Amino acid sequence: MMDEKISAVLKNKMDDASFAKLNALNNADVFTFVADAIELCTPAKVVVCDDSAEDIAWIRQQAIDNGEEVKLNIEGHTVHFDGYSDQAREKGVTKYLVPADVELDKKLNQTDRDEGLAEINGFFTGAMAGKTMYVRFLCLGPCNSQFSIPCLQVTDSAYVAHSEDLLYRAGYEEFKRHSQGDEFFKFLHSAGRLGDDNTSADTDKKRVYMDYTQNTVLSVNTQYAGNTVGLKKLALRLAIRKADREGWLAEHMFIMGCNGPAGRVTYFTGAFPSACGKTSTAMLPGETIVGDDLAYFKIIDEQVRAVNVEDGIFGIIADVNAKDDPVIFDVLKNPGEVIFGNVLAKDGTPYWMGMGEELPTEGTNYAGDYKQGATGPDGAKLNPSHKNARYTVKIRDLANRDELADDPNGVPVGGVIYGGRDSDTCVPVQQSFDWAHGVVSMGASLESETTAATIGAEGVRKFNLMSNMDFLSMSLGKYIQNNLDFGGKAAKTPLVFGTNYFLKKDGEFLNGKLDKGIWMKWMELRVHGEADAITAPTGMLPKYEDLRDLFKTYRDADYTQQQYVDQFTIRIPENLAKLDRIEKIYQDVADAPAVVLETIKAQRQRLEELQAAKGDYVSPMEL
Ligand code: SPV
Ligand code: MN
Image (cartoon, rainbow, N blue to C red; front, side, top):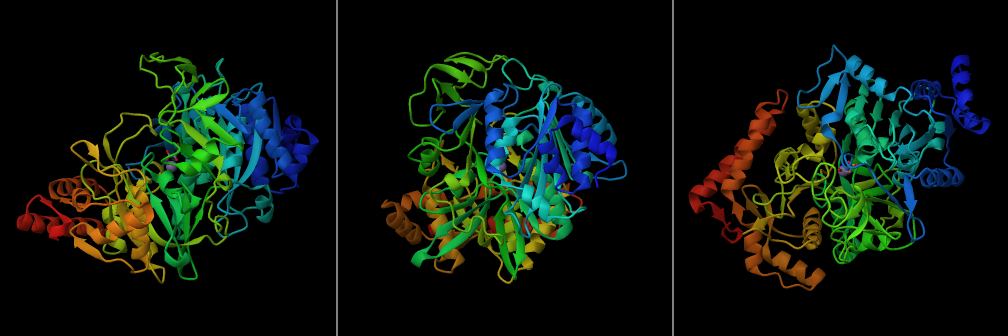
């Protein structure tokens, strides 16, 4: 039975149908969260949606009717704009709310819980005046599985709610499967006061606060999906803590199937910082996609298995073109449900940089009206589309969706890949010596040159632990230890690989965009012990002959020994400098597992020995 006071708050703002949907869940925690949100944000009305096609279509129409999305010419396509100063995740205002008696790792952005709540609740007060509050139920991971985490999203943005329909599995029925008191995640979001252009007007008061003690995330005065779509990076932070409590892993990783010889499919997961080729690896032509951004891992029957947390893709659109990314390009050019975000729109057609077509010199973009050569409010030269412009689609609209993408037990993981944007240090692909060497020297040593996916300067080399640094919600040492331990729990530990798609020589990239498909084929063979490798100080390298044959078979390309030597030369000074940087970081992590510094030390020793014997730059042919 619902508490009378709560029932009165709810009934006051919603019609009988909405109230009945909420009431049927018989979950006091849900009732309380929604009632508290109503009292705080004072919306004009509240609509509760279930999993029905009717409710989902209604949400999409709301986004169009209220101007958050505008229809484009192709059936099912819309465009959405975030404000000029709301184009990426904003780390500076994204914080954990930490109770007074708790110490959270000092590398994590945090604030006192009581102070943070007081501040953000101030911003939420009356934030939905005159607006509709949408109450949505979704599910992280496949429904009705041991991976499922039910989620409650309350938002005043139909765009956010619509995005979630594309990106996640519907979860109203999932809530019914759970009982009162079961853990679920909850998200309260308000875009806040809107300007004439329908974007958040008070972005100086943008805040994203994680109240992990309550499994709650609060987000206000922002629309950009990375700050607002609760189930994406906001939930990841909660999931990392839940995984820690329960002995599994929540990672910032894609999952894809690679086709091996004789119809074999081998699954890989991969962690890459934003805008480093993660999504394009996940959707490589000729292979199959399970997910492109978030993965949960559990041991089932002694096997490492992973599920896609999501059901759609919020992908970077810049440089997506017919030649390099044919699978997604096809989706973006044909009827079906797509939200284009922060692109250039002209006469009902979306355009973006690097699409392989000439762009109009004017239109509407992330700054409003756009004309070539114009500058933004801060004086910066405008791009036609934002570098972090995005598309949102359902994975099932991709031609190569893997047939196990919805399997409640996930897919078996053959290999784990760590890759960053690195112009001068790491070889394009190598395998670690074992799980711990991979977790430490590849995952826990991941660095990447910054991109437009977060606000700040681009091209600066940044440490990014397992590409999960932005989302880490517990101590670095414990998180690494959890990863180390996890591998040991399975009968067969996945192999670990490091990739680098961005290696340069004399200022030029050494690899083409589709070369990653060849690295994938090599890794697939390694998982089954069907390709040899050369032992280098940093890991095991492919042999020239194997790559040559793979390039010939899959690309009909002649891969020369010179290309191989340029790409796979061990650059010892750069590798040593990287070890110095990483070592310095871990010397400052009090609970870093001992194996971290030991692994760094051993790697340095191997590099120095090789340097003494053969000089600074050692060709793989000399190993
Ligand atoms: C990323 O930046 O890693 C993304 C997009 O996947 S966001 O939702 O902004 O996190
Ligand atoms: Mn991501």
